[in-house]
Image (cartoon, rainbow, N blue to C red):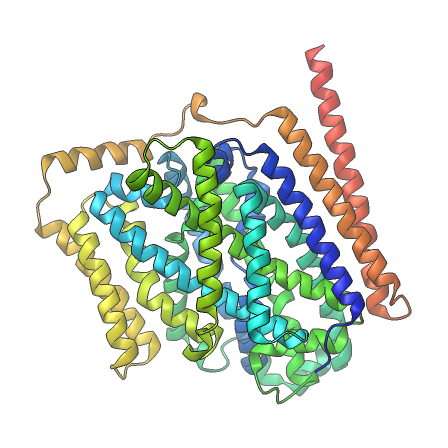
Length: 558
């Protein structure tokens, strides 16, 4: 497989410089710990939805799901659509509850709903699970970079881990979310660029479908079977709605209406784009048959089809997907370490300046642990299998009490405690000793955890003080926010946000044009130049719109 050329490295470096500028900009605006972790509840639902979408991707999609698409075809899209349900469920049910809970971290909710012991239990086990989950993402990024560059796997993991950690440190959740939006633009256009090129290389969609007919059957292969899909969809529904980053997006917007729009827009994005992302991997089965590692299908076809410069943009896009996901994860993990552990247990009187310093220090620690642990993920059978195993062991036991505790009042801390223990021990048993299939084992685990959670609440009476606290909590999450509780951003900040965003989009467009012009003699170069022009025009239109809005507000004041 060919590697990156000098021009590719130039495009990657230029891209990282654009992202660094965005991060530094938001670092200047962060004044307190609420702004660092919640964005002062003023984050627009549109970019929060895009950030949610990007946080659900990472290179894991372009490694693990691309491997499924290469092996089994369109069923890779069927499997990836599992992410649509959680967003719809959050839009209809969970989102408004999270924002009404008035929390800074998801762990904070657990003490109010259950007690301090449950908060600590979920905090420590949840951190462990998040570390493992992010190790899988970091591992996928290492595999991707190793396949496209001259870096070894260890060098690729360490390099990408350092870059991701540094970007997360600078500006808090605002920087994470706006960088996610910019990275979405690059990822979208580069992915769209690869689709016609891969189809052209196969002779067209009709030829590809004729050459690989089984790859276009929606339920092809072991992962396309109805029971397997049902259990996987159910597992992801629980995992996402118990995911700290997922929850953070919903309580960081301004009101209940914004949470609903955020959820539905995220669902639409996750329904539309999987086919765009995975079609090149399906085509790779025809273009590059018999790859030794199917999880390298996407990067292999990108290296095969894209000229110098544009390949660098593709790597930047993949890097951006993982950086988006890990940025969000590192931020919310640091929030838990800072707010729920340092501030609560070590230094309750810490100033905002001190808390932000500790938060950034925690991000460095999180990044270092994730990088080190990702070096060993390959021993679990690759990105997809590792993610599936770790989700069963930790995500399901932790998500069931967290999600159901928000919905059902007649449950208590004893049920939450034993539900977690039941889930972890049954997960260990099913993964190590039992001979059951994955789908039967996982469905059994979900039923066991849910049953224990509800039975404990029914059989074991709660103290009156606890019942009163729970009643007050449910009253709060069923009561809409008041006008005084809805935050509004500083107009100067909103104007500066629009300006920095339009500049970054324009620079991204210029990057596309310059790299595409180098290969203007081929179709990929022409498409890249067109994409760049669209980005520049979009940035100009955005700036004109913002100017008119500002001008209109000034005229009203006069």
